[in-house]
Image (tube, rainbow, N blue to C red):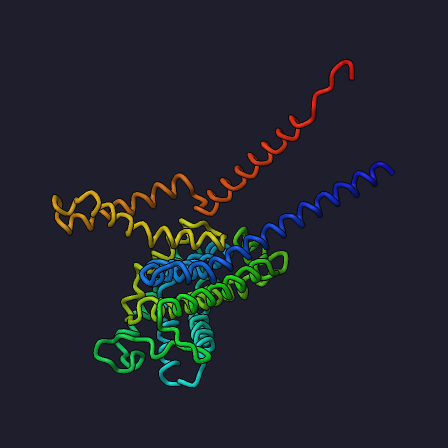
Length: 372
């Protein structure tokens, strides 16, 4: 009877702890939504929205796409920018040649086109893995950059080979302003975060993680490894495609195939490594690091007035060297990424608060004397 009471009490304690965790998580989500859709549009200037916040959010979204492939499935890809370019050029042509289509549908169809390309170029993952798979995905990067550069139909036969957003509006709302573009990016990103979080928590996400840990064992327990790998490539390219369309139209305004070159693929890769693999929120930390660090270095150069003593070309190279050194040191000191660092810092802070609360509870009662 006593053991039953103990087990019942422990289960009730676990349920209460779980309920508190869910309530805390829902509170954090509510605060994030209020900040993203309420405070930022009201307080941020057009410069911050256009030059810092929008590119950070879009690159974080591209990082989510690659992280589903690398962090959760254990597959390597160096062609993320190629799928971003597919999304951008597909959305441009859909808006240009089918102007009756609403903007959300255009973004979704552009993502599906990128997903088909991702599944196609993911076929080598059925036979190879690791470095060889990463090298094979470079084929997508070089192929689509060559395709969009040499076939002028994709850029509406313009001499400059550039694409521009024909229109950014939905339900009669003009989204061309900085706040309008930010809200477009924020709403799209929130929807894709919800999609990515749910797919990670589903059976598909568990299958991906089993393949990441050991694909042979996953096949033994009945997981369709080939199907799941191609699905991972498709979902990753789907999110990257939508991120590419937002990058071209909500941030750049005008872009060409070289806006999605190999450097952009490496930027997305560094976002995943810096933010933390198998993390949704960490991608935005990595994107903020990638976007803000060069700006901070530029500000330091102006503050220290180094441009008066050093050649501008040497300063540019020095900034790149410092940027690379910061990335290397961060990866050595924190191989699990900034999300792991923040998680440990939050756990330590919560433990310290709990200890202070517990200590205060112990000191609060009046000590008993012999007479009492």
